[in-house]
Length: 242
Image (tube, rainbow, N blue to C red):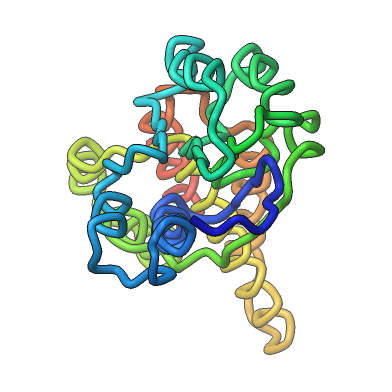
């Protein structure tokens, strides 16, 4: 066990998959006798999220107080000087205000040996009182893959036929945070297109219309469970610009 001093709580931001890929080797180095060999029992247990000293929490949707019971229960046990426990809260941007407030004291001054790693894609959804108690780390976001890449391509190049788009959306659901990330990327894409049009004296009106649509979309993001309707409406608005 490495005994160098750590911040009681860290807030890591980036895409969900990237953050998990960063947390695993970080914890392996912390617990592995060979500083993260990747093949020992400890490293394998951490990779499989089965290590006794790491508590992984990942809600299906928004956090509830029940999701955090394990945190409060574990914190009630005093640790030996050579022991450490890490709580990894995935999708911390899904913490409700009530859940976040229930963690404030523990995050600021956890009992000796306890540490928190909060993983979030969008920090604007994290309470300022949580942020102020955490060491912040940011990891670069990868470009989209899978269904996100498909949607990005659809809205940055050529729209699919309406029926094909609706069928695709039905089979490949996208959540609210993924939607916001994708809208950010699309907004940047069309702003670059607009700049190129200005520089080359090309028609800017269709591009400007798309930028206006995306600005409004950023101001009115989808409510929980409303992403499918959000993208249907966005498709109709983009289609009208063609």
